[in-house]
Length: 459
Image 1 (spheres, rainbow, N blue to C red):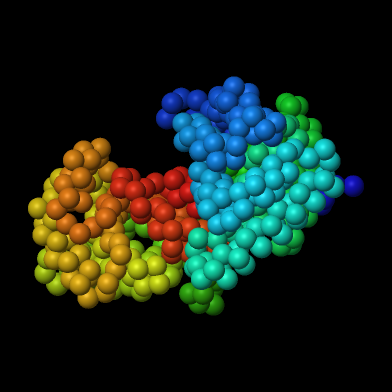
Image 2: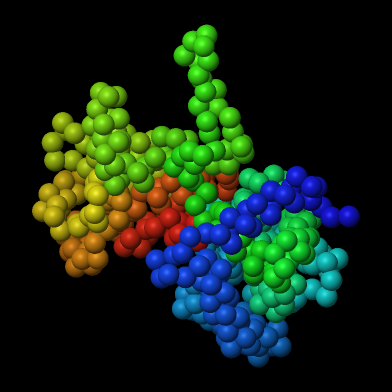
């Protein structure tokens, strides 16, 4: 008897068929072909690099610190797993940073990392590592440190399953946040909060879907292929609007009241005022007209919606922009974390080039950042430009802005990335912080921020 009922199995098959029939990518390849190529690269990296490195740690031929450094480098060179995010490498770094006794830390991690012989041992290893991590966090807090530097117990299933997967990729699926969210959205499963039990249930559903998808298609489905189905469904979990074919508006003779016929319940956590940002950023004509009918302009509406993003994320916000002289469009404060964000919104049908507004940006950044440093006693100030997409001529300008003003970093944020931040925040409001173990991590390095990067870094 499987874990899924008939309705759930049918829904899973429906999503699997969506993945198999997905349109060709820009490279002219099907989603299945691109996924197969990615899997070949992942397997090669595991066999040639990651597995030998991990075995050297377990055999005592390298120490924990050297392993941590090398696995970080390998994942940056081969970004196939999202291990560089807060539940992977950052969790690893935090564990090592807060541990007073490195010998004990090494023993605890090596014991947990070794691939389990069976599920009972897997459950025990998750629980044991959770007890150790809780103890580290308590010791860290008792020493007078803030909670931001302490590793989160909730990261353990992803961290361990990634390392178990390296040792036996056909048995231990990686506990991706994206996969868990998609399974939850599809009503295939609801996690209980018991880390060990949740991971094993996750594993069992993957195994059940391997068999189901193989039966339905006649082609062999392994854990990777099941994973790709969820990746496809969850790659854009914040659809701007539901597909028009999924809703039908009906009028009744008795009056203007309308009802909707819905094929599936909504899955997105993102409110419409945020979900529409990517469309606004590209200056869609129908939205320009809609803004006029609403008594505003699309650029001003874009600014207001972006301000709503920062409010939802937990910042203290201040909308500036039009009519207030040479100022950024808005400011977002993270007081406890001692930083502020100056941001500007730029609607563009094509890619935005920062050089077009270079001089104006420098002027008000200089004024605003100086005043913020003086009045607010902030450690860091970040400058963000938010648009549809960006031209690649920004490196020299960013360097000069950082040298000539008080901002620490300059980020070019695609509108879809903001939507991804809100989606993650609303799904796990207590897990995503404003500090260095959360959103601040995104802004601590200059350059373009895309939705994919947000999901990789924060999930």
